[in-house]
Length: 167
View 1 (cartoon, rainbow, N blue to C red):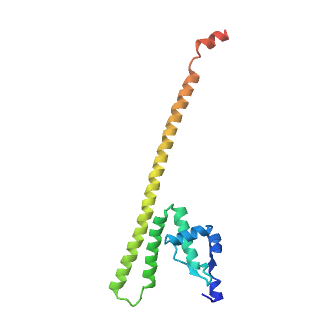
View 2 (cartoon, rainbow, N blue to C red):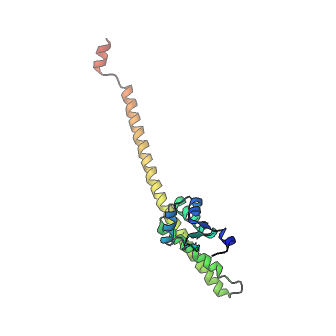
View 3 (tube, rainbow, N blue to C red):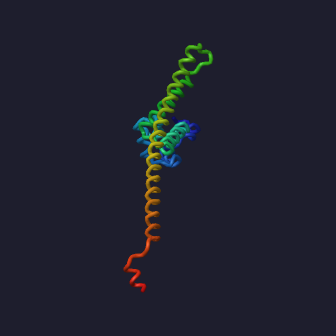
């Protein structure tokens, strides 16, 4: 890649990491784990990240930060997106109905898988939330019990030792 105008759209790893608010090491790790395709390289071997790479990096961050996905779950989500993109790229308006239907079924299948991954994460989060809500309910119950006991002690007649001292 020697054309300087096409390289202007690309970012070197330091710039890409800074824009993505990640470390260079993280970007290399994502590449190693297959979350990012090996980027284009300059003649000197420096990695160059395209706008599409940067979009994918942002998608990884969203899945990790927003949904709390593990890298393995992120890989599954991205693989499904890649399948959909391949289907879209191979779509032909002049294809016969059976071919179109097969591609649509496959796109539906991978999208359904993505929904299942999100649903699993949401179910785990809902379960954790329910556990925490139950803990709050117990704390409130204990607080009420202890505040009633404290109020009962305050209303109870004082012991003999205090009465004798006040006489």
